[in-house]
Image (cartoon, rainbow, N blue to C red):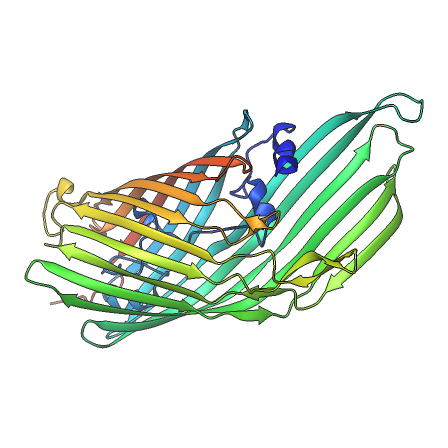
Length: 430
């Protein structure tokens, strides 16, 4: 961990479009996207019990069945982040931005809705350099040793999903997705004296596979004023038939004088996951709920170095990942959904979450994450729509644990624009 932060404090960090500057993104397949959308970012991603006429909720595909049958919903979101990273009194403040998602939903027949879209699954993005003076051990003076660490890449998901309500208050759904992307992690140690060999290590991989998520929701009345919606989503785990590559090189000036390449077959695995939660709506004005998420990464395959008879061997292992668990609580208040005034349709959101990481750092569990969020929804009213919404959310996330961990503080501004176009009205001419 000391080495990790040495990479940070000895570097200049500039804004990146990758959406992430964290040294923790060097573990696993990078920093995982939380998957939240404009309607629930202000609620820290509360999703399992959320559904409605104007909600595109890919996190539980059963919700598609509740989408308004007369409109096409189109949703796009982006986030802008400022981070503050500290370790032993040193700090840096990287900034970045990210397109969070693009998605749409509409009805295709009675009680059947569909959705499709694009979103990031994981993000990798860091570039750090550190330098130090070496003692004069050969009589030719001191030398400077420079270590450079670079990580880039990530994965994305293109999905299509269907939700069906076979009978009143109960719906089923499924998302079928294509996961694609790649990553490169590299570390290079060079010297100011060009006659000394440099060392370079590269870790690379391509990931292309399918994802399947199955969801269900059940809604019922608790009494005349309160409605309860229960939701569960299961993600199907499986092995990925893709290889990882490790390249170990020796360099003299810019020439490669020695290299070893290792290929690892069937190097990755998608975990089984379960998300469950509920949402309670009071008088159609106030909704609050709770979610629990578990992604079972612990026994997933991933390339790593193992000690085999005293030799470090790059191979598939099951020692570098942990189960991710997350708890979310959030709520939303809207003045009067049936009102005629602008202020009746302004919504206010709040949320909080706690999560454990899916990766290990130096064979120990990685840092935990704590998030607080607030949001506001502003209706866009014109001659074409009175239910389109601009969502503005702010999030504060703290990542870090004990004194041996880098502490990261993230401040995010999230913007989401949800268009609600009445494409499927039946016009009558007289």
